Image (cartoon, rainbow, N blue to C red; front, side, top):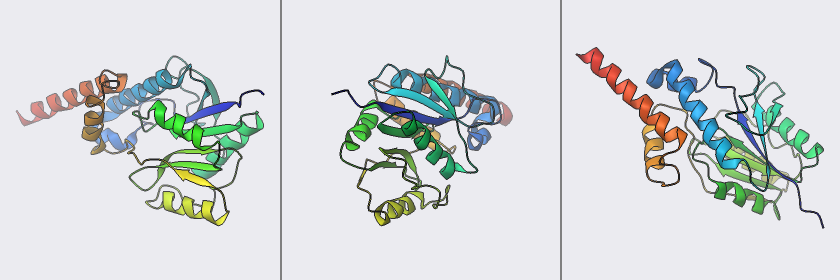
Length: 229
């Protein structure tokens, strides 16, 4: 019996100045926010390539795909008027292409581990849906075996996205599993926490993200000191 085809899709943007991690710009500047996001992609690409599943980068139409040197694997342009429709499009395209278990993850979690992704694929052996909530009320990972529309009726970018999605899943009688919650890196106050997470994990301590974060924070401290002098 042939093994099932598995796909990990990472939702991302091409790391162009002024278009990525815009809510970090007040803390890092446009160039700093771009440099940090490039490091996110580079770490995710290194961590999830050459695994027992395929890797796909589902990028926004604006700016095109990220460079393959940062993001090895195949690419797919997101389609749809909003995030919910775009997520549904990713699942429809992947499953139409023959994938039998599909996990979609955010690129805003550079510390996402292989173990979490493997747990998501394992859950899909018996569940219809798997979700990993984010502490801001959303979710940073979702997996399915079939392209069920659990997205387009849920208002995105609110503090109740995860709860609302779970209600849709329950109302449609889909079997589901919830993985452990984690945090996204979206706001300046997330940066110290990210630094602590990376420093506390020997596998992440010298990652591209850890090194770039140290550089950018040092630059900001130097600029702040110069302004106070």
